[in-house]
Image (tube, rainbow, N blue to C red; front, side):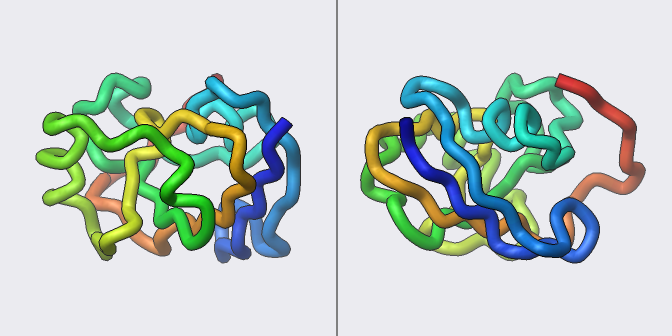
Length: 114
């Protein structure tokens, strides 16, 4: 199992979070499975940027982003060199430290479940 540390986010996890995720799981699914309701307006199909995260540690353990993901990331708020769409970032065998940006480009938040 891979340990994931989520840095505090004002709305989604004010105290931060620490949990284990199975390698091969998308980061988005891992977050949702552990009660962190990250936005995923396109239902995890790499068609928006609402699940944008910044991988502060362990970035190199993730498979490279596809061209489609890179194109979508160009539209994300607060893009950094270690940004990924959590629906496309597959957990590997190295622990991760993840930051969820304060804002997304989504104009209306929608209630989603897994």
